[in-house]
Structures are given as C-alpha cells and as structure tokens.
Image (cartoon, rainbow, N blue to C red; front, top):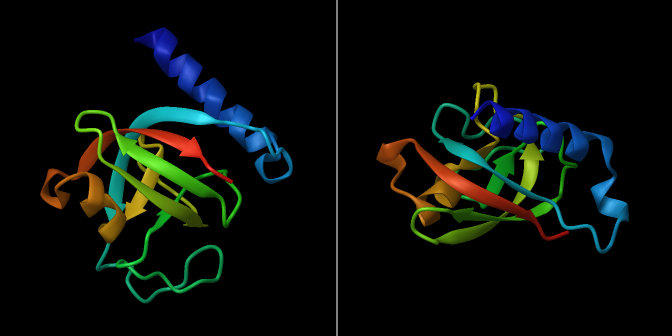
Length: 123
C-alpha cells in the first residue's frame, strides 16, 4: 500500500511538471478517489474565472491545465463521463479529482459521496 501511495504521488507530481496541452500523443492515466461538489459552490467563480454550474460536465484538479478534457471511469461499475477542468482542487487528502454534481451522477450515486476512478487525459 505504501508503494502505491508513493507511486500515485509521483504521478501527480509528474502531471504538474509536464505540459500536457503541447504533447499531442501524451496519454496520462491516474487512478484514485473522486468526489463531487454541488450546491454550496453553484453560481460562484471557479479558479479559471468561469462560473461554477453543478449541472455542467466539469471538474477540479490540482495541476491539470484549465480546459483539459478527461474521461473519468468508475473502476467498480465501468460507467464513464467526459469532463473538462475549470477549477482547482480537491482539497481533501487521498482524493485526486472533484467532479461536478452532474458529472459524478453519471458514474455513481451522489449519496455514496465518492468513487474509485481511472482518469484519462483526452486533450
């Protein structure tokens, strides 16, 4: 388990150091825990300057460029959703992405609160 945590930290640092937008053939994949955010932030400005809309297919990530398009797949049920990054976060330990309410609802029941996901950079 400790090796997995170290490996995930390396992947996150690698993602922050690379310029994913300029590498056409770059394929980054991350596995980890996803959560969602909704009503409390609905209508407020995101880190990108865009107004947060909990009904759009968006997400928050700590380092990926704004506008980066991702495919997020629930590892347990195979359901997936495409989102784009428009905010920073998550700010909880051991969580790699925050999805908008609607995006999360596509892959898991919101009442569950989290899902284990695979994230693939599309462009």
